[in-house]
Image 1: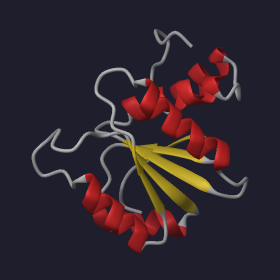
Image 2: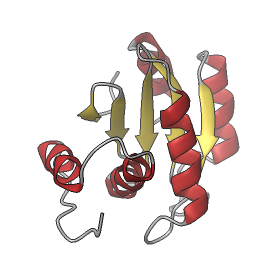
Image 3: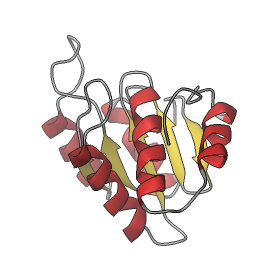
Image 4: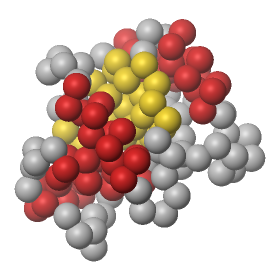
Length: 138
């Protein structure tokens, strides 16, 4: 994998915008689902959700598009929570957006919705990955 990523927990990776050609490497690392929290056309030259979905599926992974602008809405949090709830213990998920911040916030809100971790644990996990959720009401 040439795309940098960070680890939020033992099954969750987060990254800034990934490339189409990096998806096979993520599949080789055990990622079975890719969640894009990035809206289409946010920045010139970024791959579209349809392009990402096709490349993820070609690499043997499922793709979920749950775009976030600003703070995550209920749709994005619910979609992310469903993936996390259904993820097998041995499988991994990769979430991405422009910088990884919106994905990290959405992950934290989804984990709270699932009652899988306390707010301080989520803030610490995010901080260990380089994301500051100290102001996020969890």
